[in-house]
Image 1 (spheres, protein in one colour):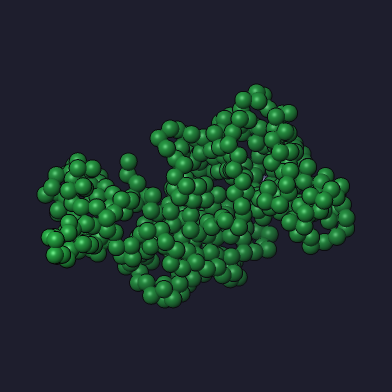
Image 2: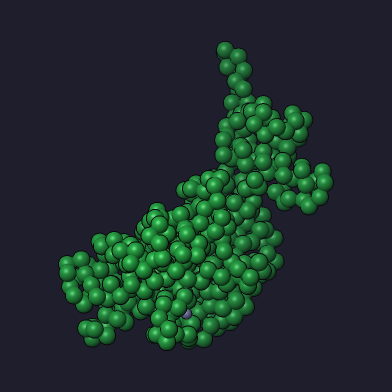
Amino acid sequence: MFKIENKGKAQIKSRNRIKVFNFILQNGPVSRTELEKQLGISAPSISRIVEMLKNEKYVKEIGKEDTSVGRKPIKLVVNKDARYIVGISITKTSIYLSITNLGSDIIYNNRKPLCEIETGMDLLIDINNYIEDSLKITDITKDMILGIGVASRGVIDYTTGTILRCYFNDYKEPINNIEVKKFLKNLYSCDVIVDNNINVDLFGDFFLTNNTMDNSKKNYLYVYMGEGVGGSVICNNEIVRGNNNIGGRIGHMIVEPEGKTCNCGQKGHLEAYVSKSAIKQQYTNATKEKDVDIVEICHKANKGDEICTDIIDNVLEKLSIAIANIQLIISPHTIILAGEIFDHYEKALEILNNKINDYIFDKKLNEVNWIIKPKKDIMFAYSATALIMDKMFNIE
Ligand SMILES: [Zn+2]
């Protein structure tokens, strides 16, 4: 229905169909006359497209009934539950799944632990079982799925929708070349997008639902501190992927040559200092206590505990080196940070800012909007559904 044809009249027709649907979605209820005026499409074309959308149950008419004072104008609204979008997030130990309707309302949202995964196929089967179970619960049939968005950790080839390399559960060896897009497309014959989870979150959630993207070209930096350290860079409103699709992997910036060994095996990378496990390890080294929570380290630091203050200070030091370097190159307009330290240590942003000001080439580069994104609000699976909506209906 919403496939864009490549050439000639078919292309114009297919684009007009999306424009009409998108306008009703964003502005409904609207009349046919409003559609003609706002979109500059002829009346016969509008009626033909609307008929088609009605037949496929994508839109419906309201206000049809006659009243004593005359006939109400017929308006069109989107039938939000005509189709659904599945969003999936793959983390180290779990799969998260969201189902949204055409109005981006969440119909279903859940999480399950990953099965024992030894090969890429194990993961793919696990994902498919989860989708099938969720469809059963929500009583949605396969043909009602408009698209599947997948946000995954690891190194992703966005163009082929393949997870090139990723570590799961506690395995020391990564699994390589998991062809997620190919597998799901075969089973569901709908649009499938696979991207790095931090890219998905920055683009899908921050850009789309907050509508911060206006017409001006802006640069953004997003740093996510979790089990690993993820990052995403947007330059001129586009995600930086680089020549080989693995550009923008901030967690593996060198912040101390020959420093601590990173999860990737190389030395001195940011992730080796600021990931959750790195912070916990520093605490254990200093106190011999095991299994302490980062939130607890932050609370102790808030009360002035010296060891905890030092640990966090060191984390912010390494982070400031990485951010100052990125600022020099892309001069971002907004920097978004997600991590327990920023949620729970009161002075985190102030300290980080001061450190950057000490290091940076020109203080002007550090005149940015800082946004702390609370970790509890991050929903990669939901953001993945927004990517599908954007791909299908945003054709400016
Ligand atoms: Zn690394």
